Amino acid sequence: MKLLGEGVYGKVYKTKVKNKEIARKYGSSKDLYNEYIVHQDIYYGVSQSCRKYIVKPHKSSYLFHSYSVSSYDMEYIQGETLRSFIKKHFKNERVMKSLIKQLKFVFSCIWSFGYIHSDAHFKNIIVLPTGKIKVLDFGFATKVKPVSKTNLSDDTKLKKWFCSQWKSVLLNLELKVANPNIVFWFPDYVSFFAETNKINIKKVKGLHNIK
Image (cartoon, rainbow, N blue to C red):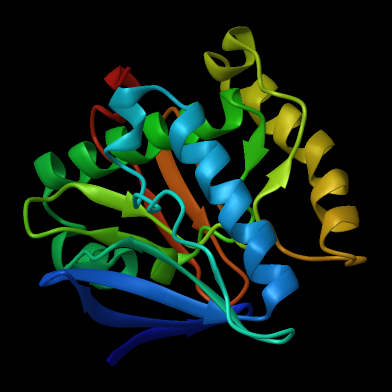
């Protein structure tokens, strides 16, 4: 197996099952089981058009190895991190508008379904060679009050909704304070917030016309 990445709740390896490459995450039994359940709930709960932007968890793939270790499988993807992609293409208006449109769509879906990802930093959003994004790592995803369609269409109301739900995220993660690892967009710019990585893309021409 080849190590692909490592997070708070475990390590992800590339392996093969019946000659098909997959990603397998190993971690603490309790934490990983909760992540597996949430990942399944989000992926199979959102619309089919939204699923294509989320890494697919394999059904019935959770395995209990011991009281301290378990694993579950998901699709294996190849691409680059959001940070790497932005650094290469931030001056390309067409590419950036496509990226922002995808981010806006997938997070709208997740928030409308009643979850905040809570850990959507640059390493947890992968851009495929085709330019399509994939969101992964739902270990910190938190169940919240779903955002309404009215709030989604109004940036000021959307920000107010998000901030009002952030307290629930902190309680779920047993934290007193944390920067929102999430994506916000506004009429004339888009900002990506993360605890360790921050990039602001300002004044992307025509961004306000993205629906």
